[in-house]
Image (cartoon, rainbow, N blue to C red; front, side, top):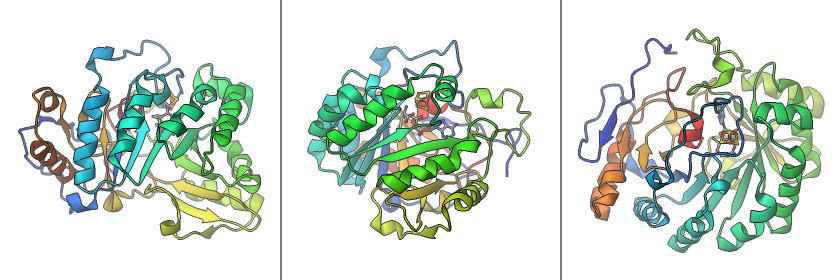
Length: 353
Ligand code: SAM
Ligand code: SF4
């Protein structure tokens, strides 16, 4: 695995530079593209320790964000190129004032699936309108089932509001809820089996995400750039702890699952729901990567960690036609790295996970 020292700097390319960096050796084809993750804001109402610095977060001016119309233009290009799924993310997508308008515009394009990842704090107010506007599925991020610890990890978040949010989502008709838990050694790893238990009673998919060292995460404060980042607990260990509690896990055919994400999905006797593992650190799934990311300001990004970026902003402002936007998508896919390095330079809240 590459270390921090060997990490290749991220080039920011404008829409007219179509060079393929030397490190992008893997076979990459636009035909593999299925999912566009769209960040609608870099702002958030929480400060999760693994995602954002506690203080001094500099947010973009609202005028720098893509407008709902510009997001729609990019999404239409993506649809024409074969993208079937879009995922709205952030920052926290529910703090974007025009979120419902964005969803309506995406819904009108006719994707197979429009989903949203949220911390859930505002679902009480927004679940029903989001459903009405066209969101098909919701993923909630929850990293502890203990109110005190949740507050500590998120920098002040209230778990009771998240519970209310889940109830509102259920009442609004969201049945295939996914829960994401970022597992961090020494912080919340003693709760993995408790999270798995949630799938006993509920038909939810509980997904365990390996902590990824990105940006200025506080988990990394003393990290010297060596191979093994502090905080990482590999998913084989998480799985073994879960199996000790609930019994053996059996793989589920991914084709039968909703979404086109990278999780390996399992079930077990007596579970109504599913258990998923997203193991970007211990088992990178770069070869099967079927996604691109669009930041809130319109930067199309090849990979969470490495690869290149193409800023669509100038093209959109100049009224670029679909053919040039499609060209930018193709160039961006070609810049995917063969496999990602040990540490990414950009903060997760800027990239949308
Ligand atoms: N605010 C929303 C939320 O928390 O769901 C959406 C944006 S958040 C950046 C998207 C996902 O990335 C969340 O599930 C979050 O837990 C995850 N995430 C953030 N930082 C991470 C990190 N360093 N490693 C692994 N997952 C991370
Ligand atoms: Fe906000 Fe989501 Fe990052 Fe937590 S993980 S700080 S909720 S963007």
